[in-house]
Length: 176
Image (cartoon, rainbow, N blue to C red; front, side):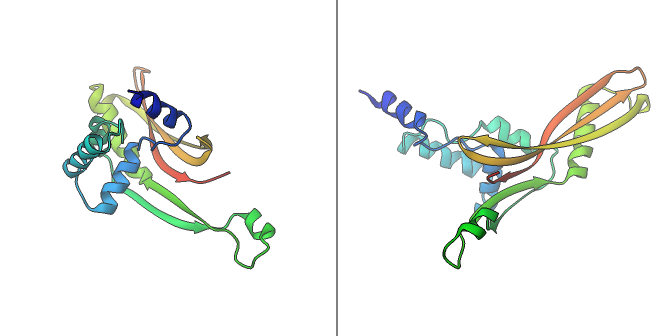
C-alpha cells in the first residue's frame, strides 16, 4: 500500500489542499452561515469519506479566536495590477480577486489589555501605562503573497513589570 507515500508526494508538490487557518475557517463559517459544531461535522465527514489528513487548525484555535475577540470582517475586491494595465495587448487587462479579513483595532486592543490584566492578576491601580504597537509586512508563502498586520498590546506596572500579547488584526491575500 503506497497511499501514505502518494499523499506525501502530492503534498510536497503542493498538489494537495492547504490547511486552513483559524481566520479562513471563521470567514467560511460566516459566509456559509453555519456554526462551529456544524463545521466540525463537515470536517469529520471530509476526513472520513475523502481520506483527507488535515483540513484546518484545531478546534482549540478556533474557539480561542472567538474568546473575547471582536467581529471579523471578511470580503473580496477586484484588483488590476499596474503591470497588467501597461502590458496587456487587449483592452481588458487581467484582473485578480483579492480576499481579505480584518478586526477592529480598538476592540482588539481593549480585549487583549483585559486579557493581559486577568491572566496575570494585575491590579488596575498598579498599572503605569498601556501601549499599542502595530506592524505589517508583505510575506510570501508557497509563492502566494500575503499582506498581514499584527498588533502588540503591552501593560507596564508601577513595579516596572511588563506583560505583552501579539495578535493578528488583518490579512490580505495579494502579490507584491
